[in-house]
Amino acid sequence: MMDATARPEIDRPEELVETRLVTWFFLAALGYLFVSMLGGILVALQLVHWNPLQGLELLSPGRWRMIHTNAVAYGFIANGLLGACHWVVPRLTLKPVFSKALSYLIFAAWQIVVLSTAGGILLGEAQALEWGETPVWIDPVAQLGLLLVAINFLTPIIKSKGPMYVTLWYFTAAFVWTFLTYAMGNFIPEYFVSGTSAGAIGGLFIHDLVGLFVTPLGWGSMYFFVPILLRKPIWSHGLSLVGFWGLAFFYPLQGIHHFLYTPIPMFLQYGAVVSTIAVEMVVLTVVVNFFGTLKGVGREVITNLPIRWFYLGMIFYALTCFQCALQVTLTFQALIHFSDWVVGHAHLVMFGVFSMWIMGIMTYLFPRIWGVPWHSRRLSEWHFWFSGVGIFVMACDLIMAGVFQGFWWGALLPWEESVEGSMPFWMLRVFAGLGMFAGQIFFAMNLYLTWKDSQAAKAKAALPA
Image (cartoon, rainbow, N blue to C red):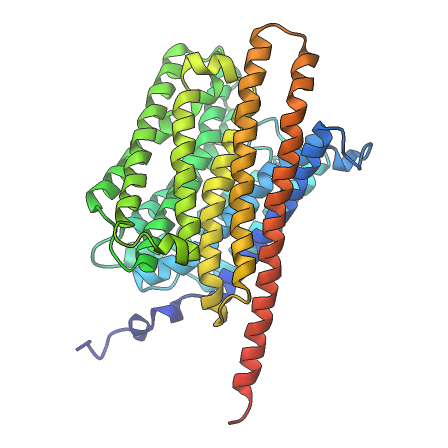
């Protein structure tokens, strides 16, 4: 029997979760996703001369391209993963976050940071650093916010007793790494170093933002949700340790592969190439681990929609990493440098992997938070298929475009030849993006109808017997 002095929340771990806050983070994430996708469609239309908003400075594609990327990274993915953390951490530690009031403050402050960043970019105050375009007056606020996030989640993790779940290993590392990564990318190149040194640090920031923030939170979430949905433990605990320590050791070293064939010293470029290929081997162990877990319950991919989102993301992750191992070699980089291959790679990893996982988490959690099933299975299926097929078509299209562009440039043809030749690829990209956007519209419709069902269920339950 449990000790009478035991905390009551151990008996009811769901009471530790502030479900309203989880919902707010998810809804904010979806709002930014819509803004980001609209920005992407605007830029795509510009490339094929179909932009209906020509001549408007505040809607110029140059500015909206930065809003597109920042809204995805800091708006959609950050909010989505923070919502997942507010669900997962209290359940694994059996302790609430350090302060629910602080959680609400973080939510409000983070939206101010993201919206202020968008406003600053529109007004022409962006910094000249990829993925670090946030205006200089936003950086200290964002840095403080990341510190508060770390305090809020690390406190229950540190206080928890007993064995530490692999999910918490990933989360703990992410909260520490992200704070340091943001400081490295948004302060050091601007104020302390210049030239190739700033470029090298900028390259580390670009890649570590994905690998040391999004990746550990994403994989950590999968180590939590997949065993729950499949009702079986992860296939190999040993492989989970290999994946974690491999990520920790190799990933921080590879960011300079974004700047091959530059004045950055070649030994750093060679090191980035080797560490990148090593990371792909590490990721392969994680993918194998999760597909080993699927053994014997493979039918769940057909019947269980959240699992389908998760495993499609894992397939895209394996493809992304194989593609990355190719593109970081100096031989291959000579072909696809500055081409749309890199754009396709970025879309495949950010939407095809992490967005798939966040969508799967939302698909799983919204019915549990609201206490009713999804209003329409058909709308859920359309959301999945339009999103999955759309991103696959877009990624293949842009990757192929990058190969053609590389050969055109290598043949020393006039620049206009490559632009004209890219037009069919860019047109297909428009329609693939519209398909992905349609998927999110189906999700928003289903979400609203499900919320209406939950309100009706509450009203019915409140009626006297």
